[in-house]
Image (tube, rainbow, N blue to C red; front, side, top):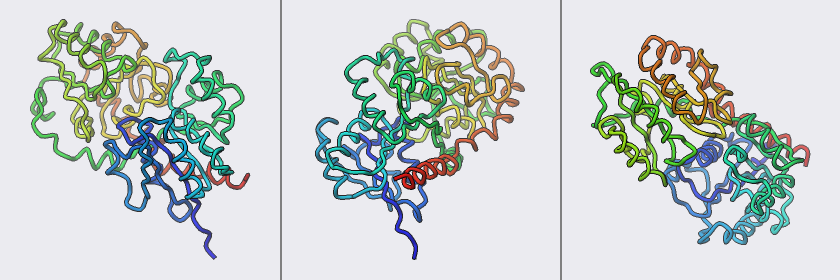
Length: 374
């Protein structure tokens, strides 16, 4: 007699455009249906990834005005679903899932995921919110950290936590498929064969973390070479960045088109992907760029890039929080097409380490281990 698939309840605030939301989506879509039956519980069923959830994944919306208002609805859903595994990928929903499990009197193993290096972000572990996170993490059966750097930071901040490093899942085949879509007409872009301008691409939320201000300052020092920079994403720093671009006189050389639902044709057409972050949890866009055959320049920020890139072999790393270091590396790569091609070629095998089947398999092994222990 075949065993029934184990129910995995995944709780998120929504399915916005961030890496944590993509990771939750890749997990629920990728789990082996003969062994696991995922259900996705969202406080609000909104965000660009909602339409990408597989048809066989039930999506439940709680609909609270604020995250803390979702507690009782989430506890009811845990009682109704009777899941064998509980999982969440962000701190706010993780705390809520921890509380809801206790309220529902569930004995299901609790697996939480940490995606940020909070010390690098300058967040004090002594704040009330972070102390509550610590209680949740120490109560969890496992806290999955998406890089070794995040793992070490989690242990330093929260103490006796059962941690395990599992990298972000990246849908390599899906990226290749979506990269073949047409970009349409894009100001400042021409097909690679028809252009003499190096197309630089940066992708992420327009916030201080991503260091786009540093990237603009770095690019401003290379006006003697032909380049155009596109920064995809939205965020609170859009106004500041536009003002910085105007101040630098770079309106014709830097574009901010906003959030793009499918950025992968842009990755594939770019000559170089630049990650200028002051800190990261992992650096998802690095692997995405490699999957489209695009070379990568990244800061060696905490945490993640130096766990993905072999400096000088599969990409280039430079000092974080330094416009001068970025400018030096940018100048070298803009000027050297053979080096860019060499880096892209050498990085071809890297994405396989982070492909969805590989990473989902690691989650499945973890779930099996916890279920056996229970």
